[in-house]
Image (cartoon, rainbow, N blue to C red):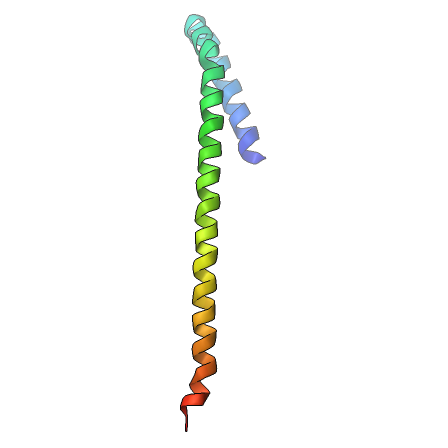
Length: 81
């Protein structure tokens, strides 16, 4: 939520400064804003998907490690004859 508020504040501040110094360039930026928003959304979805796959792999690896550690500790008393 904080990142969203920060983004809107940055966009608003940038537009105000842009209109003050060069209103023509600001209008060009506003014309391309939908394309930038769409590409940002696509990028966010791609990173979220990659993060989900990474979390799944880490979960599987941690299960293997946990099983290995528990199995070794259970078998240690059996080795003492």
